Image (tube, rainbow, N blue to C red; front, side, top):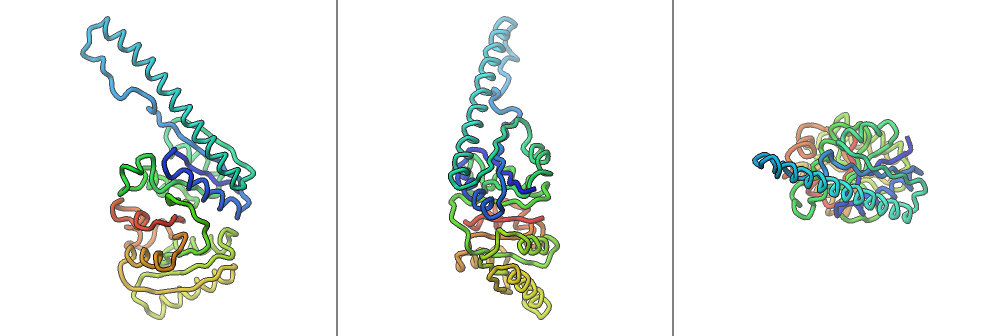
Length: 283
């Protein structure tokens, strides 16, 4: 289980994904498997242009299209190998000893499901190949991965910086409690500063719950503090991230309704888009 699966697509986020993955792997003593998946139709001609042609011309065109498809498929495969070779070089320069690469064709989600029993976590970029053209949207595969996998998902920001401080968005939900348990048990977080933030109107019960989380994390080797703040989770958490200069946001992938809507909902309002730091999601 001490293996991290990193998903790479050659986007502007890929280098940051590699650096973040190496940082996590170093703290876990884990190996890394780098995966690039070619879509089933990647490299294929965009449409069938032969339907209205006469038989002789259609046969010639079909042959030309078949040759073009083969060429595109070879180029897509060569590009995939290049992406993986570059990723392996970055990971090894960052100190990861065990790096394997895998190029597959088909559906990304199916590929991840096949490998999930062997992995401890998944890393990927916040946005995919269209990052420069669709900066207001998350990668198309991100929600599919978060919804389906049972392992933690680390969503890398565009730029890498070493992680020293963490904001834990805590709402008392089952997935938030899983996040606390996993953080307390993981060497990844030892020695880091953690701010536990619960966005709610403060009362004695909520404060006691947050204090217990702080105590649990402090006992696991982190420097932890807790805050209960009113307001909109998206606005409050983004502001605290900025004010505290936090390097990582940790939260449950499915929480109480207000926070759930931020993570698994509209890609135009999601908190994961708002913050510039990476996000670690637990189920």
